Amino acid sequence: MSPAKKDIEAGRGPIAPPRHIAIIMDGNGRWAKSRGLPRSAGHSAGAEAFRTIANYCKAIGVKWLTVYAFSTENWKRSADEISWIMSLLEKYLLESIEKMERDGMRLVIYGDESALSPRLRSLMDRARDVAEHVEGFTANVCVNYGGRAEILRAAKRYAEDYVNHSAPELTEESFSGYMYTAGLPEPELLIRTGGEKRISNFLLWQLAYTEMYFTDTLWPDFGPAELDKAIEFFNGRQRRFGAAE
Ligand code: IPE
Ligand code: IPE
Ligand code: MG
Image (cartoon, rainbow, N blue to C red; front, side, top):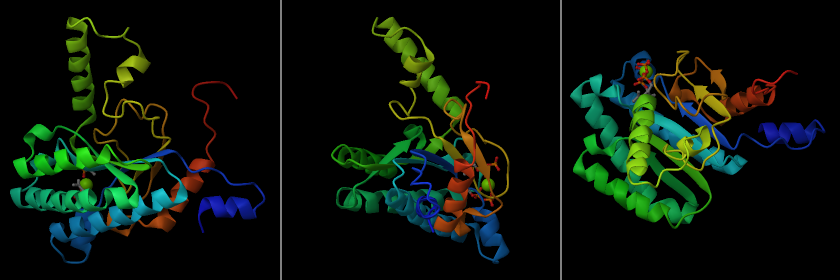
């Protein structure tokens, strides 16, 4: 049962889910290994898990889902593994380009596209064109993304505007406008699957006050019931943002 439904039944009235959820989708490799399968099979299963979770987030009223699909450090992996992940991304992009409008699900890519294949980049361009006409739930997929790289990129973009005399006064708010997440609320909830308790260079600027949920569940096994648990955890937090009780 979704947390919202549970709350209604408990007479608490519906508690809105977080508007923005971020997920470090980790554990695909271990999931495959535990089944005697190649790592590629884990990534395929992970892509399926992402489809399911994105649909579920949309259904329960989450507005933005930001997921970590490939980090700036993941280039350290074998060429075979990287090309498999990139082919899964291509497949997902093609699918989204066809279905985005019908499903009311926007796909946005965050990250440095310059290192990606021309085919992937052209699919990203096409997805961007389609996304412009789509409203509603947004899935932000981070590809060749690093939190530090994002902050450096923002600093460079700000410096360019400064030189062109078009930069606003430098504040936390105006600088946020130079991030990929410009205009979005910061994620209220971060989920990391796969048992590690680290950020691994994800959304360093945006996670300052985000609630963190870590689970040993490997990403391909993470389904709607697991997301419900994470939201329940979130609903139990008292968010103080530095203030006294
Ligand atoms: C996450 O799963 C997906 C990517 C980093 C691309 P992993 O591939 O890191 O899975 P584990 O951590 O090796 O199990
Ligand atoms: C983080 O997972 C990146 C993604 C899920 C895309 P990693 O598996 O790359 O992180 P580390 O190496 O365990 O820190
Ligand atoms: Mg991992």
